[in-house]
Length: 556
Image (cartoon, rainbow, N blue to C red; front, side, top):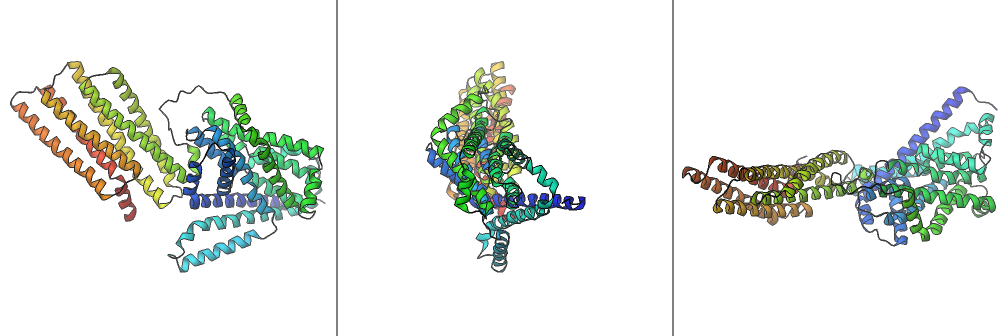
């Protein structure tokens, strides 16, 4: 039987629409789950140990939350690239992620109208929130999860109905009849999944074709094996431009699925696997047969390869050589763009970058004061290098803060991001004023300018006061401490700094009037005073940043 062009075009458009709805539902569900369980996700990642079994369990849980093994692996690439996780810790999580992805496929194989069920539940939740918003406010985060699941299954149903007319088209049957060799089936599965970048979506296309008996179950098994290889493409693309260690994460993911596929190709060709699975599940439920095959593939491959995790790690190291990077400072140390899939984690790591920036700024200030007391070429060069790093960090952190601010964040993370916008600018300004102090120190060294012991002691005492204020401010920001007593202490120190600075200016004017100080000495002295006072102002801003962010949030 032949079908007309209009019918074929309708089938293709309906198939693409169903695929789009399926992917939209999966992304909505994933984003919703991350929004609801973002903090738990951070806790899970913090619990990573060297115990392989624990890593597998964590990988399973995280992938159930993320609803994508590719997303989990991409996130791992980011964590390893940022240096907050070791390759050895990521190996077990990758294996657990492959098991976790079977949950969605299992749900797709159950013959229930999940689209109607979940959309109905979502409507009930919305009605409850409309009539009693305060009482059911806690359910708001689950709405996108529920409707995401509904959209996922609605898209799957749309794809199934789109393929229904094709079962009678001889041309389509002839094309699929060419899939008569296991290796061809594996290749097709890998290519389609690589293009879609979702194994669940490609399996959702495979299931209705198998249900219509257009593709025999024996070939479906090999297509399924290939789909496990195709899903690795997302992680491979994600590691472009990353460090050698993070590329090894994608390599381990690929090795796991390629080795698993080779093992199961041999088993399926030597043993009557298809007959065993049909006997186990039943002849009339081919969707469940595919789901069970998917579960067996990932579970058995994990059990077989878990004892050889170290071998996989070593093999990845052999295939991906070290890139010779020396850990230069001109880069983000804790954050990686691949973390944007987990907004709560991204906010936390940008916070770590901001703390790192604060430490660099404070270190530059201390070195600048030391250079003023006694010139040191090496310290001066280090300050210059660190100033470039501070400028780089200010630009990069600000750029990613803008992106993270547009994501779904918890109220606490929203406040944190808001505070960081101002803090990193204050930290960068501390670095600028430290650079000014260094320039004054360089002028003093070059011109061999001498200061009186009293003037030197005045500057040293004020510098020590500013150093203590910076330490307290950085500690308050790091701990996000908003207690009134702590904030008042910083404000009191700031007032003391202002009073001391004003008194020192008056003393200096007196020395000038009495001709005890030259004009050049006076210029340098006043320049140092001004920069110290400005650093004190920025330290106070850093300390009160959390309170200011809270006030701005309440006003908004």
